[in-house]
Length: 512
Image (cartoon, rainbow, N blue to C red):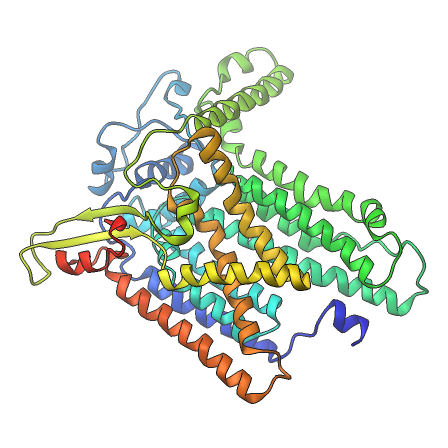
């Protein structure tokens, strides 16, 4: 095998289908997500915060306090939902999360109005785009268009991703930006290795080797990870994991072509710019997301009048000081979030779907062919996919420690970045947590399934019997996932069904 094929394996198959296949999968998933998007005509679970905060950000630039009964006003079509105060900063709302996700929700409200469809539109769009991104990154990881499309297809059929793509919460935006950042880093890995191989084949091999340029894909990854951090603070854990991961890739590439002292050389030539792109850029992006708070006098703790009365130098200094004080209050809020909730769960319960979250439940008076009807939105994963992912992740651990395959390591590392910190919060802070906090882990669970599916099918040179048998097993799994999603779909979409039909889908009974 040549150095080029070893460092950057060729991408077989049609480039056209490499784009069309993921696009078709995304369209399929998008149709599922946009169908009846305005149903239920209600403020679902934490939409009571984010739909109003989002409308406030596009109206005032910051989050504002709202009047009593604001949910009912919104559902009646009114936009007069905010308090008025003099001075304006007294009506600033204390919020627990950075503003970018709310700006994104607000874009849908700006386009379609303050309606359930409007505040859910961007979640559905971003959820649909994530199917395409996952299919493309899975294709790059496996060098298989079929496996890439399988990844997007499975994500399209996952109940938790489906529900959060139809609800105005922040988690689908966090998941999207984390996935996009990972995808950019995987592309950067290929591009940088291509440049290293080009140098290797055209130059005398001398220590320490070349610099690898400005690496725009790594910069793009930093911007995406900054967007994740600007959506929820937990994006920070993925930034830390991905910084370590991509810097190890740099050293590994230099070692793979035989350059001496690869880690020391990577430290000197690759890592300064790498840290700037993947650590500094995200922090700058996070700060920039608060531009609305800096630019207006209406935000929580803004202290605008006093700051402007003492000159622009003091204004800049005091503004940043006030903003840092605000972030410290937010951190304290998260550390003290221990109030019991009926649908809370612990991180160890998430992979087994032991306690999903009821986003919405009503008992309509008719429309189900029974005297006892139910209409529900249950935030739960598709069990076939989640239980398959548990098995696949265990297989990936064995695969990684036996072969050191970088793909297994990257997927496991990303999964742990989304899961492991919550164990600390559970033990140290006794924090209230929910299953949907696991959504950023989900793309990496599906990547684990797809990598194991590639092992089951076998390499291109495997016997026809092996590949036909393996493809049959993987196809059967995909069909089971489709059937499982179809069975659950009435309780994911607020479809009116009989109470008994609803109860049959509440398996295990901890779902009730």
